[in-house]
Length: 409
Image (cartoon, rainbow, N blue to C red; front, side):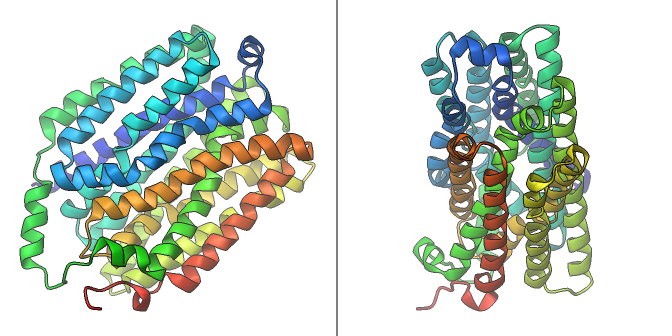
């Protein structure tokens, strides 16, 4: 495969994530609308439940989705999942009861479950170590550009039409991506995997030994902490901007875009810089681990923003903390692939993404309970800081090469 085609497909994977996140984040904008809350008579607890419902199915299906792409490859499972979730997203515009929206969000989680295992598997078998940080970084920018665009795009569509048509337009519009996927992406990852296994001197590592290793548990803890902050931001940040920092609907959308947009830029740059350091002789584990810990620690400044009275300072720290988390974005995913070279990558990514999206279940629901119980956003955001520092400690203490599993007993 030519270099230009490879990087085009990486960009296509990133665009797929943009569409996926547009379809999962648009609800958080709708839940900040007074008319929507009044129409369905929503409490904060119910808003938290709706925000988390996508992740009930999405998280539970990560390991099965990893097995599917390891077994049948990336191309067809991804295409079927993409088609399903776009149609489900469009149907969200027709809901007339909360139970209908709840059901559709769970179905959306089923459709999107294949995205990360498929994308990471494709990168694993098409991008060598010295390119993998940039490849993952570019791919993961889609997870930040999607939320960044979701605010202003959803707001613009709601203002131009209404919230129902917003769901329909975003759902149906995403189907254009499938044309490029079907025409331009080869179905070759299983063949490349077999060739890599024949040439590799690294013995196969059983899935059970991966799960039993301290490295995997350090990654799970750190991944949960990282994504607790991300999913709080995806589901409650628009409401925080509007309700506590008194922004207008349009300003809320723009600040949400700045927060995730900064994270996207930092993620791509951090992946590229780490690749350059590794290409010049840096140890891949040490380099990627340092970036990951730095990102988690810098992101913990979100707790400071929750305490300050100045709206300007608070908004600055909201953008800074999410942007800082971008230091970890590409590197913590690439680090997993570096530490488990002989294991089935779809399953490994499935485990890591299960931890990621378990946070998607917990963060919206805990925030929906903690916010009214403590009369504001300070306690939920202080909890985020504690979790991020815990994640940094887990990477520091547990994610070490000597703890990585081997085929030997």
